[in-house]
Length: 76
Image (cartoon, rainbow, N blue to C red; front, side, top):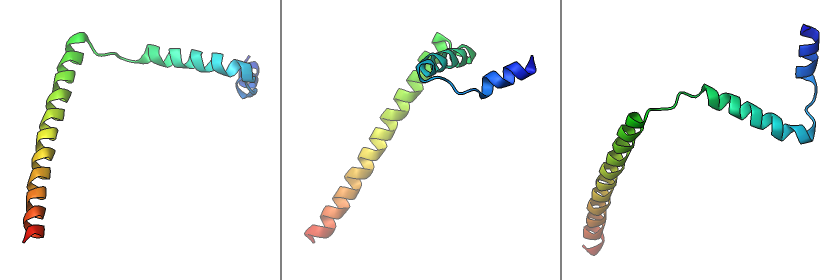
């Protein structure tokens, strides 16, 4: 029995069966995924939005400061 299974695993997959095999393996992996609850998803989405806004403000401020410094150096 183990020899048959080993032979089947080492056998080359036919090109037309690759898609079917890929689909089956993908579905098997998706069944293993632990999906977040709705509350976790909402909470994490809010965290991501807050971090994006904070980083945007920070990078905008750095850009403004550096552009003013560069303008001061070049105009002088």
